[in-house]
Length: 252
Image (cartoon, rainbow, N blue to C red; front, side, top):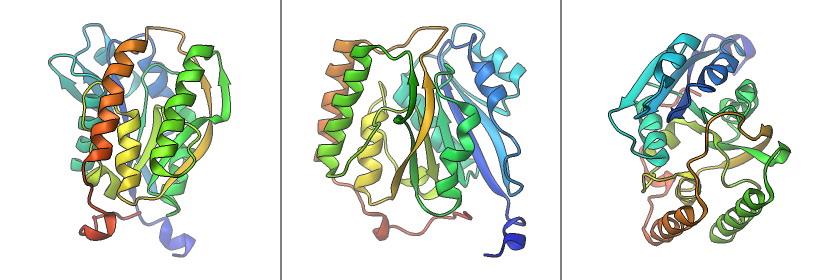
């Protein structure tokens, strides 16, 4: 496609932000989202309020969130990500990018994370902290990331640098087909599910800093007892290959 023709195509990009009691940081994240980084891309911000009891929704609206999807009670990060991305698909997203609401991931780097999808080079992109730069991650968290990423690499038979990243982008076909089988978290089962279906995955380097406000929901033993069984269930169930499906309505 010629450059002049490319500019006539409007790609709808949804930025999906799952949040649970993140009123101190969610506004900062939303204000960092680049709205006009390409003339052929329209950007919309969708906040997924996972039953927050603080001022998260008000802070998001004040910062310019375009749409809000709210749960009456806390359902878990996996549920928030699953429902948020499916909602973006239902609302016509050609591409979606998810990013955490705690300002650990750089929202201003969204263009470089979605670029491989916009250019047709990938279907699923992870922003990799370990290919980029990391500030402030504690040793036990770093080791935990290494272990779970190595496990995913072994299960998929390909090298992954950062399997737990909270900064990811998806084509429309991936939004339609991916499945997250548990509500607690999504990181490992999402990648296993998407790559096992035959979609093209890519990692791009990003910058990362540990959160300065709020508190992470992750607790070591709880994480292990919930995530490991979910990985086991995901690898045991069959998935349909992308070339066996009907083509999606993807304009990218």
